[in-house]
Length: 156
Image (tube, rainbow, N blue to C red; front, side, top):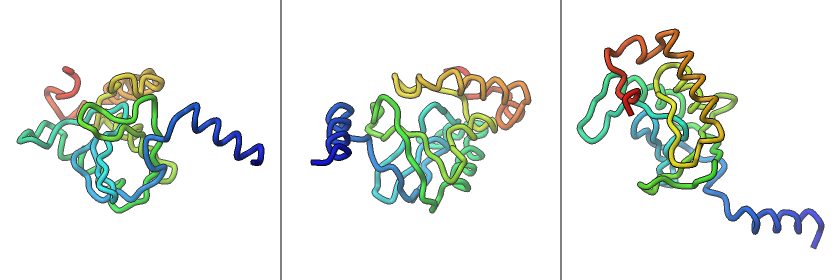
């Protein structure tokens, strides 16, 4: 066995299997922060919370967040990166999702489509970064921060 193969085996055994694919086609957008891949796996975007449009709710700026996610990801081959937890309590894969140089999680918060949110321990390593993006969007009154009388995710 080569040194490289041995190193890869040691890393795999030490770190465990990856949470999922490193890239996949986005087949459907459920809402602003949840997508479905061509494999049927549901992915919950890490570090963000967009206003709801599912389960009979239609929060202020929810349709806009979902439309932004769809325009950015739908039909694209997205790159997925993971954090400390692979899934949430609903069984969805937790990931940062990017197309090209654009990471959607970051852009949702920067553009005022989402609040910053750490899900369990996943995303905590970037919590400060996302809190800064949210503060900047609030100050600039971008997206929901300028359009909504009450920002639904801000109360959580």
